Image (cartoon, rainbow, N blue to C red; front, top):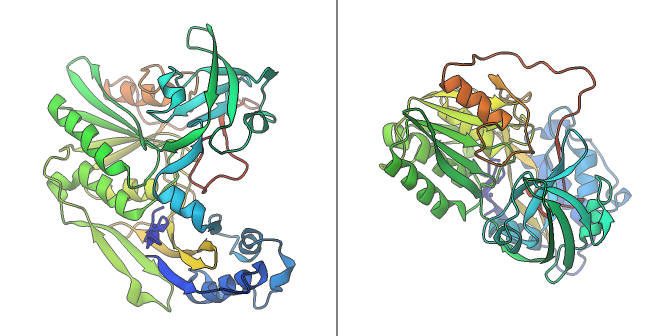
Length: 421
């Protein structure tokens, strides 16, 4: 299955080769490493750049092994996870409080996003709130992950916040099994007579399907004139979910047109295929679509932006995207799922191989001090100013030595696509 990653069952995701190897009694890391090397010599996109020989016992775990052998010039993504981790992600499940955080330009630790229907969301916590203490200890970039404890149900933390008005808020929160809500936020922003749909989307996983329908149905009832898709933290997921989002974006007018071509290495050209834009009659009908991107906007997110660009004008605000024009197939090996890069993604015009990312025409920083939908948030403001005619595309300039906001990621995320705690 393809994930982009291909869907093992999976950034974009393409076909899972189930039971590529069946290891029963001697399920050691050394044997796992050997099987990874064997399958990569066949299916890896850059198989001819693998080392000619390796010592499978020199590496303490399969991830260390795949890091050592992958083609460093292009491949930053091939990875290994446990079957349990894969199942958890594909079902949209995680254990934690259900929020992500980062460091702003002043070094404050701020909430970046919150999954809906969680204890922390129901307590009123929002993007932009400052986290000051966890269990009585002042937080910083280095200690906050450790202070929050293990990612398992029942872990309780007392967290001190400052809300959007600077008012102290003290909450006792318990980690739980969370259903990830990939659509973090949607609304219609009124700018004079112009109605602008705004959608914040975080994960290309199956729970997105009903959330797409809910959001786009609302946009249709409101009769939007413009659309902004905020993918600033979306690092990918399943290819079929990416196809579906494309259907909502352009499928009303361009349904069944070529969307994404996947190309394998020269041993497996028979696996090459082209997906089509799903025809969704109640999708939007617009001549242009805006996106918000960052260095975290990758894989399936880039596949969508690149894939719809032959049909409508695409304008990116924020910063250049990550640059992952390739995808992976998943291979079950013992208790692991290996995800080597196995194919490249190309749109209907043959555009792909954008390893430097897709360029932002409206440069802006990720302003984590303001909530989603705040018209003064820098990336959103760049688009609103452009729509109103108050801005034109330009090259971003930063003062030397200035400090960007940045995400703080888990030490060992459930997958490279999960950024929440």
